Image 1 (cartoon, rainbow, N blue to C red):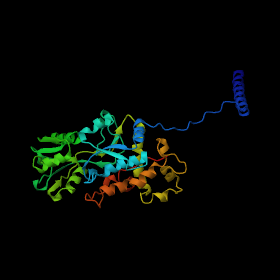
Image 2: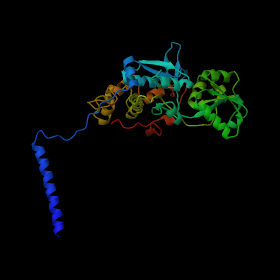
Image 3: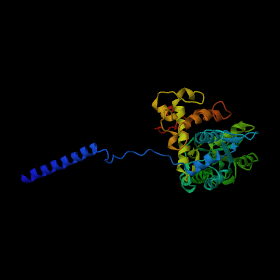
Length: 361
C-alpha cells in the first residue's frame, strides 16, 4: 500500500515540474522557441541550369515519323513528340520556340543521353526496365500507349505470323522491336530472317523494293507510314499486337530536378485537359476561385513551379503556347489529320483511357 502511494506521489511531482518548466518558458522571451518547418528551397540541377544558361532546350527527336516527329520543306519540325519538347521549353524558359531539335536514330539514344549531347529525348521511345537502368535514364510519364504491329503488302494475303515463316521481316536497329519480333517468331517455332536498318526510311525503302516480306514497329509508326504512302490501300497492318509499348520522353538520371520538370509538365498537359483548360480559354481560368485550379496555375501565391526553381505559373506558359494533351493529340494525330487516330487508351481516365495526373498540391 505504501509503495503504491509513493509511486502516485512521484508521478504528481514530475507532472508539476513539467508544468513549471512550460510556464517559465512561456514567460521568458529568451527561451528557445519550438522548431518550425524550414521553407522548401528548390535546388536547380545541372541540366536545368545549362538550359537556362543556354537559353534553349536541346531535344533529341525523330525526323522521319510523320505525326510524331518530321521536318517539312522549310526545315521546320512538327509532330506529337516535338510538341512535348516545346512544352518543356515553355515550362523552363517561358518560350515554346526555344528548342534546338537534334534528329537522332533509335540506336543513338543511349549515347546522346549519356554524353549530354541532348537535354532530353522525345522520340517514340519505349519505357523498359533495361533502358531505365542501363541507359541511366529517367522516363517521364507515358505520353502515348502503343503496341508493336506488323505491316505487309495487302495483296500478299498475310494474316498471321505463321504466314511469314521463312520470310524476311525488317525493322530499325537498336529497338525493342528486334527483340519482340524474335521472341514472337521463336515462341511459335517459326523460322525467319530479321534484317535491320539504322532508320525507318531505309526500312521502308527495302520493303518497297521487295527485300522484306513485312515490316514491324510500333502500330502508331505503321499507321503513320501507311497514311503517308503513295497508295495507302496497298499496305495492310495485320490484326495483331505483339507487345506493350509505353512511349514517352526521357532524360538523364544525373539531374532529378530536370526530370521532375519534364514529369510535371506532362502531368500538367493531362490535368489541363481534365480541367477543361485550353490554349484558347486559359485567361478565363486565371481568376478562378477554385483552389485546385489556383494551385495548378500557380496563382495567388500558391506554390507550383517554385518547387522546381522555375516560374511559379509555368503551366500557364505551357498551355497558352502549346495547349493541353488533347489539343496536342488532335493537332498531330486526331480525326482531322491524315492519320485519323481515335484516342482509345490515350484518353483521360474519366473517359475510360489510361491518362491520369497526380494532384498538383
